[in-house]
Image (cartoon, rainbow, N blue to C red; front, side, top):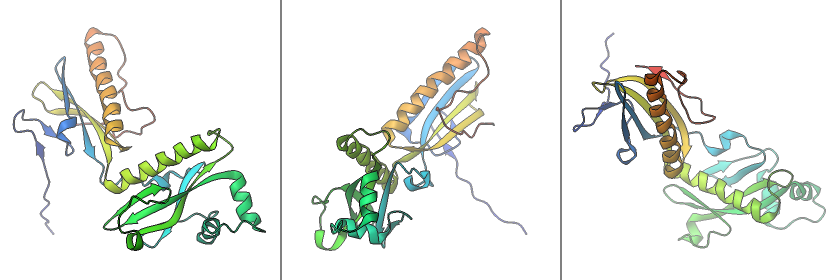
Length: 239
């Protein structure tokens, strides 16, 4: 059985460069090196990991809306409801939870998507219909955050990450070594970078390291190790 397979190619009409992934044009960097070029760019991550997949027990979100459901074995829908209602009296489970975590309320605007906010979400429109108050961020009291103010700042960061996830503000970083004819001969990509500014800064740092590596190789110094974003499992391949 023969099937027709359609592929999409991403070609810069001015330079003739063909990109392995669809680039975000304003992120593209192209630097000459001995025998070719280093090409770096961001590409939108179409299947990023959701923040709850990182399984961080020190700081995490729970939410119990039918259109956005993030459950937790410890912080159940029932227990979170009791916390919202202030049912602390004779509630050892809730009292223990508050001894271990700072708890911050989270509002969600659910209308053709999800947007989260710390606190009451009073700035959201359509309060009566589209805003829910069935979520919270929990931040451990015992490790990295010295006081409630620091913990609240960390919780705000988690909310920002979730909003980046919902809005598609997540990227892959791609580096390619091109030969003199601008054909790709080495590719390294790494994904799941939240926030355009952060991803671009990481990309620029590694781009510079790639250029320096190639210049050092030409001079007969340095190794063959491919620079990459710290902590990133890359998709290095030769084209």
